[in-house]
Image 1: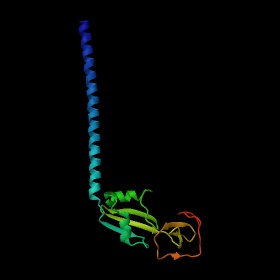
Image 2 (image 1 turned 90 degrees about the horizontal axis):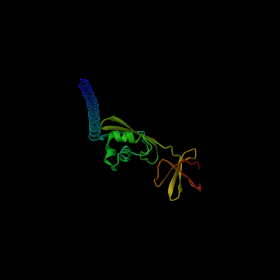
Image 3 (image 1 turned 60 degrees about the horizontal axis):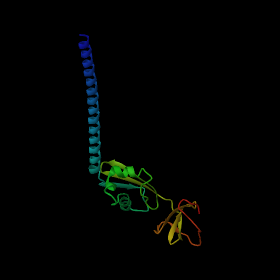
Image 4 (image 1 turned 90 degrees about the vertical axis):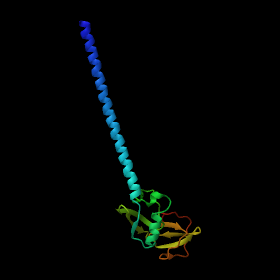
Length: 173
């Protein structure tokens, strides 16, 4: 009888161990299901944002050197389909990787609605330019080189009689 009682205790312990393992398995399965649902929700949100948030309306402010259409064309380029997405553009222009627009000190993109953005630009304060290396070297009233470009900005002053040995944007002449 003692051996029968001992055998019953061993079987009982084994049953308890099996039940504990199944609870862990159910908890792991629940966790896996929650992770799967979360991933599917994120994928659905990203897909919806990609297809729903296409730029249809653009408002441009602060521009004097370029027309609003020229600014919009440079910000919303045809390089990639993502450059037509309001969320992507707003995020891109918050980073240092945003494409630069010549003669613009800063460009900011704000989302006004799911299909509308507002582009705020701030033109560089160009004082004058001189020919340099087959291109034009634009500088500020402080003598800081702002841009080295083949473009000519009609509103800036052309300076003659000045020679420069070397110049890079950001350097003082």
